[in-house]
Every structure is written in structure tokens, then in C-alpha cells.
Image (tube, rainbow, N blue to C red; front, side, top):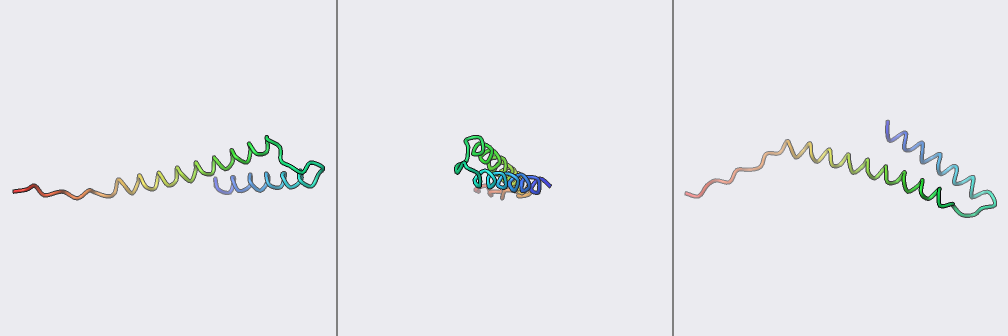
Length: 71
């Protein structure tokens, strides 16, 4: 669900960037770059949180081996 929302936001953003580039202005404004950067940071944060959650869940399943005491 979240991935579809982010994908829709990116598609809309790139469509807007395409409209601006077809106009007289050939470059992106600073505001547009801030928006693109923010979206990419949110996506990277979501992926990082997903990886962290998966690794944490798997880490609780693994039991460490016991080291036998020396005689």
C-alpha cells in the first residue's frame, strides 16, 4: 500500500517536472529538488526500517551456541 502511494507521488512529481521542462524554464527549481530529495529520503528510510525490522525479528529466533566449560 505504501509502495503504491510513493510510486504515485513519484510519477506525479516527474510528470510535473516534465511539464516545467517543456516550458520556457529549462532547469528545475530549488523547491523541486527539495521535494525530490525528501521523497527519496522517505523511500530510503522505509527500506531501512523494513530491513531493520526483518533482521531484528530473525535475530530473536536465533539462539546463540553454548560454549562448554573447560574441565
